[in-house]
Image (cartoon, rainbow, N blue to C red; front, top):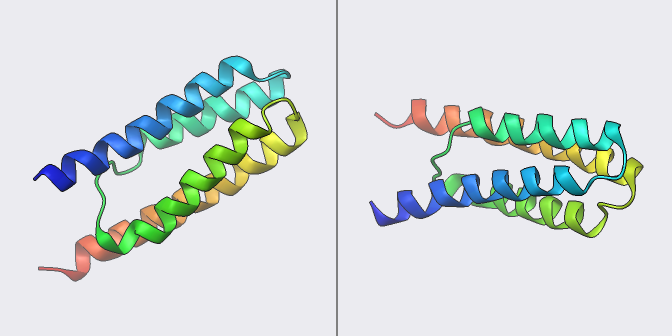
Length: 102
């Protein structure tokens, strides 16, 4: 049970990080992308499994890259799109893991 809580916190923590970054974006288009990304994170599955560790590590790395590049709108928007794709992959993998175990 402790593992599950920790992993739920992980996703919520990343969502909060992205929400904070949206307030630091220098262009409206980057701010909008970040807000949409945070919204996506809010509605995707918050729980994790060991099979998602690699994808979640990649998402964490990309969010760190977002923070490092927040003053570059083009890079910010590109990274948001990459994170959206990783979240989609995570969602699909999560659905697969949930249906493949009785």
